[in-house]
Image 1 (cartoon, helix red, strand yellow):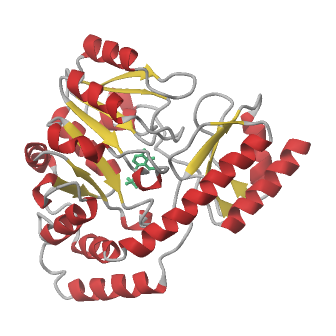
Image 2 (cartoon, rainbow, N blue to C red):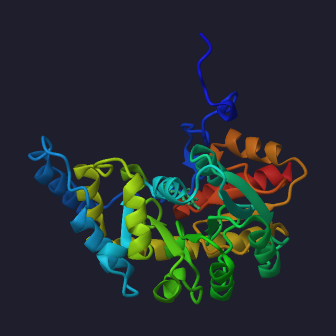
Length: 355
Ligand SMILES: Cc1ncc(COP(=O)(O)O)c(C=O)c1O
């Protein structure tokens, strides 16, 4: 029997960055540092504590975690202005479920995060993509023209951007929010990796009612395996998302693990400083090879350009180093790993370029 699959899903392969077993995996912007013994001990104790209550559904409003996330974000954000789900992927899908839908449009500007069109498709929302400039900045007049023409109910702007690493200036964010007829999501999945002096859109939250700042514990908090993403926005926006969330979407185990990890924010953010330094060194090293490298406020660097980027990607993989073939034609993206992993990346790339 032919499955009654939605027409627009026919022939589409599921999302899949290759999950290969390689010595040096620098392809999905993970944090390379596993949790410390102190984090493991605290997470284990927290899970043990909730284990005895798993016959009950979890706190639907994840009050303890929300309060901890609001405390972490600062900027006057209250617990009722925080929403969380299983990864910021789910948070943003919920935003499209609440604010998108048939007859509506979501907008972003390429190169942009590859999952956005999938959220739009899954929420049956139209998808329109403008462009960024050659240095990956967003030209405000172009952005405003796209908004005027398409009147999107949702705008999705990663800052720092994936795959380029580019952060948006606050005046750009403010101009887009002012012109947008709907909600504007500034996706700060890599927010903690910003360079000194690069501001967070959280600074605009109090005076910008249609602004949503999305964050994740997958990157800075080294918690990709736990799946915890969250946002800060007005109470009205959080309440609207509540309508579309599945009942008890955030398990008691997830809530316990994330709350325990947040108690170690200082230690985990110190690791982020190491990664930022490693990122800056990687960007400088790649430039010293006369490669183009996008300025990065994230835990990865986009570099190029190569006539045959696939050949470079494959030759690195043959040497045990997995990076990502993504972004505009000719560019490659490398996630920032440990000092040892980056040394292996450099050695492999030198070999490949010398060929
Ligand atoms: C820009 C951006 N947003 C969101 C995500 C999703 O992260 P998660 O669902 O793990 O929170 C990613 C993951 O790589 C990303 O690059």
